[in-house]
Amino acid sequence: MSTASVQFVKYSEHLSAKLEDRSAKVGIIGLGYVGCPLAVEFASAGYSVTGIDLQKSKVDTINSGRSHIQDVPGEKIWKLVRTKKLTATTDFSVISELDTISICVPTPLRKTKDPDMSYIISACDEIAKYIRPGTLIILESTT
Ligand SMILES: NC(=O)c1ccc[n+]([C@@H]2O[C@H](COP(=O)([O-])OP(=O)(O)OC[C@H]3O[C@@H](n4cnc5c(N)ncnc54)[C@H](O)[C@@H]3O)[C@@H](O)[C@H]2O)c1
Image (cartoon, rainbow, N blue to C red; front, side):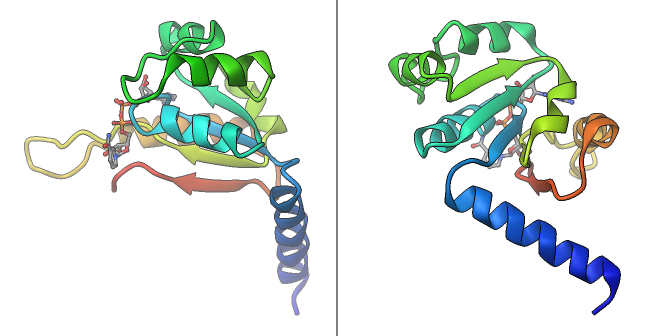
């Protein structure tokens, strides 16, 4: 096996163990209709979750233990924030501490009916600044 393959196996085994024992730090980029419920589900499953969004109002709403998404009850967020399982920020530098990153930014359709990828590209530019080897990136946005 090549050195790169050996390193990959090491990273994936390390991450699997952290996911198994719930010590993995989970990040969600984009706290809208997809990202917010996803963050709540991960936190409810026992992971420490950090949500990142450009909109400070959404970040402040979550950190004050309230919900901006109709399907997500405020009490659920309040409990997770109080127990420090869920936090939100506009500061992308937290990426350096994360083990997984789920990208949940918008991909609106252009007039030509193909998706506008600029939000994903912008999120990836921020990820590239801070990511560590071994971090899992999941693209939830429609592409
Ligand atoms: N809503 C659905 O039912 C649904 C279902 C399947 C797939 N999707 C896909 O999931 C993706 C997200 O959809 P949504 O409905 O949650 O969108 P949304 O508009 O509700 O939320 C997107 C969030 O991302 C934030 N954002 C935008 N650019 C950002 C950036 N560069 N960095 C950090 N945050 C950023 C916005 O401020 C917003 O809070 C889309 O690609 C959509 O097609 C949505």
